[in-house]
Length: 549
Picture (tube, rainbow, N blue to C red):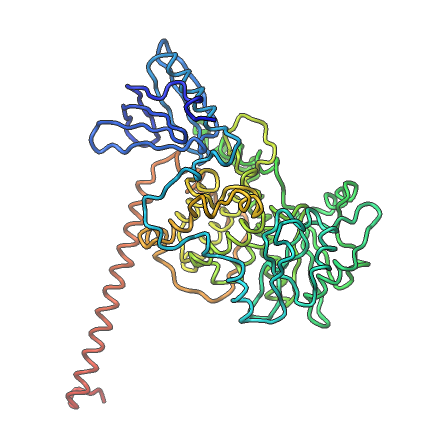
């Protein structure tokens, strides 16, 4: 298929662009295979380059011969294009709708994008499982790197290399895979250096109504326990939902077959509930006609903060079991690709200081989300404005980022990265020129040869000039475990995402610049103090009369 077939009117003059808190711009609108571009001859005017894949929905309005297109984006931005001529407006709207809903992944922009920057580090090779395993080997010899899934035949959503207990062979893993949802047998997620406890993740056991048993599965998870120790199974579903899953062939681990494990059920919502919550939240944030009480009521009715609280509470529970109770943990929900990953990754941010660095957080996202098989292509196909009925869409990754922001806000000096980094990841998960968040699994990425045909987001992020923009000026390395508060008054609306386009950021930007200035000035003064101390020490050494008694 040629893109030209979908573009009925490639260009229109005299188009006026309306954006929040920015002056209107008149210019020429151009449609390409992947971008909507508006350029103006006015001085000091920034061009608009909008990826079609970032467009969630459009609305058309007409007043006489003047047509307007309201473009609603996946990053929650809303812009308006006034286009002279009804036919041109209809043609452009039709083209945008066609280009923003292409199904074929290989037609998406990352396959056509060529970087304008020098790639100093290939992000596709930055966080390979074999390199991460070397770090683990330096701490313990109880684990091995298995190639049982090298052709993705054992589990289509797992990567080709997986860390499993050393005493468990590949044949056992194959048998366990038949007993776990989607073949997602328990694998290592995190090793706690302080006490040797571990966190594993998996899909639900396929126990069914007959209470099917798998001794190999019992052997695998028991291999992670120390002698005389018990472990915790954190099921991210309520007891009722887990019971219902039995009727569909799923279920949970019975106490009789797993006597060394204590099962705890939590209530993290899935799919449609989360998507509806996002839609209601964005609707509330965009509606500025209500009183404060009504606005807060709509905000509460969205249940978004409730989801944030549940996820953070469950992550804190997992971290507490590992660090304070000295117990190993297995986390799963149903598939093991959504709420499971939210819990395992947030628990690591709480426990592991390295996950709070820029590179460490990239490694975490790569290992616990991208390689672990979170279906980004499905979950991020639509955002809050889409008119189509949600199928597999859900803001699972956005909720994770929101939880990270809550912890960052509570511990502003413990993170090397700033809020901008989290916002950037949200944007690129939904629409990007990079291939990092494309596809639903490692198997799909391998089949489409993404590392060879697309550029990694990490290649761009890890350049010195970008790192400077994403670095937190307040950062001071903190080697301690950090325990976030989940009290309602401690959890705030993430304004940097949800109110970003609804109010001017001028005051916040000025405050941030002032803070950076104060920090830099403080460093200067500290350097002067150190210099004067050195000079005084030298003078005291040279002249005995100056020595303090």
